[in-house]
Length: 437
Image (cartoon, one colour):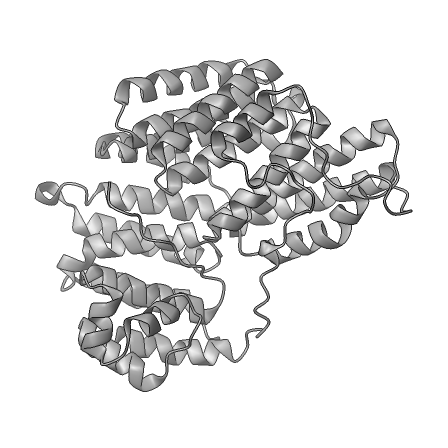
């Protein structure tokens, strides 16, 4: 299996420029070193610009345009980027790298981590009573309220929109609370809400291509769920970990994590949690090319969802409806290269996104890509039109996954660059992704 290219974060104009440089370099089939040679700069400098660790100057943008034959796309984006960056905070501290302390599971290999999850002994996260802060039900209620608000922000506008706010809250409020003074009944509630917030931090980090931070947050969340004795939440976290493993191409880990999520969910008795875990197992099997196993897992997910009563389910899983299962089924079809399957499920998925802009962008990109999957039957104009309609939403979403999905379709469309609608894709993309208004 070829090594997967690392995603880029896209939370600032300079990061968007770096992602655009990566897009054109990938499209032309050049390594960073080869591009550096053509542009008369070094490969390491190209790498740093792609990751926004260094900022390109105008002459370099022009040289890169010439080397990559972009028609001036990078210079135009550079000029827009410079205008936009003038109004962007220069604070580059990465709060997402701060993880709650004292988690004994952080460095464990995956098999050992899962053995610890299945063991009877709960880990200790933080040292309760090491400060005099008294933690009560009001603290728990405020933490759940913050969790609801930030979950809503993530689902609508992507992981980068409120990631810093969440990691700051975890570091400044949740971690001290775990070290505070509280009784046994509060301990279970505190561990549960802390686990859910840490899981959300993991998902936001995953969505913004901070994969190492995501893994650390997920492991902290899993340890806290174990300490709380909360199987429903533990299964949900394991399913999130399976989604990350799928996205980063770790097929064996994706299957193992999803199978563990399904088993844990069945122990919990939550039909919605079993359904979502089964859907993630279907995706993991699809990544491995096992159609029969994918079909079995999807059938199990649908069966469980038919028995679910949302009011009886934990708040964090109520989003998993038949419409969300249709989205997962569409992604499974995409992994199998089943364009008709993608197109069959897409109308329900796209009509039910509401204000969930990230889901709309990901689903639209998947649908557009399905129309380009077979070069002999490619419907270029249809694919381009779908992408054009998704770009306004994409401009509001701070998600590396979203931009990566759009760029994958742009590369599929690139051989048809002379078509009017493909030209419009490129024009609208440049306008949408670095707004300067």
